[in-house]
Image (cartoon, rainbow, N blue to C red; front, side, top):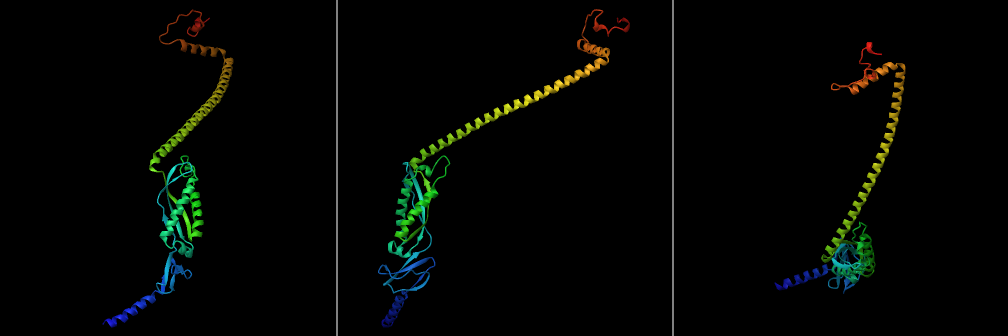
Length: 294
């Protein structure tokens, strides 16, 4: 029984060993064949490929997808000696699989290099800018976009030539103040906003007073024009009235004198009035009969 199983086992082992002469590569990766740790062939793309059997040749697979490495928040110092807490991430991919395999070999080691380099570049860049470049209370534009591009370009120059890694993007996704500094900065921002609000109120009150003064001046100007026009119309009316009155008087002076006397009666005499007049008073002429008039 053992004699029968032994040949079968040997055949199975040989077949398994021969099967290691073939390997497949996925669409999302490339592969390098290494012999005793050194690449012995070119880059293998997706598909089925041949190599020397294990353990002579080994396959090193390199992920070609866009990868994201998220840095932990790190405390840094700005140019004006302010502590800030910066959280960032890096988008990267393997640009040169052969150089990548010769230097870092795997993702874990590659991200360790990226972490060291990004921390160094980020610290140097943050240290060359003031706090106002990242946070300000005056509403001015911050410089995150230009700073992120500057760091990405600087990192890419190093990683591309040294490790075969392409830095596609670098972004700051969190920028905060350490807990011990947060309250003082918030108080300063609140005081600055209060100052701006006070300034706006003062400008508004000044503008309101100016508008009120202009309105009062315009009102007086319009009233003065209206008064002048009213006086002119009144003078014209009085002149017309006097002309009409003079014309009427000239046509019948006796009748006019009669009307004026009646108006005088209405003015000085009522039900409770008692008057004493001389017999020859002109005021009594209408009250006397025609026979008694002189």
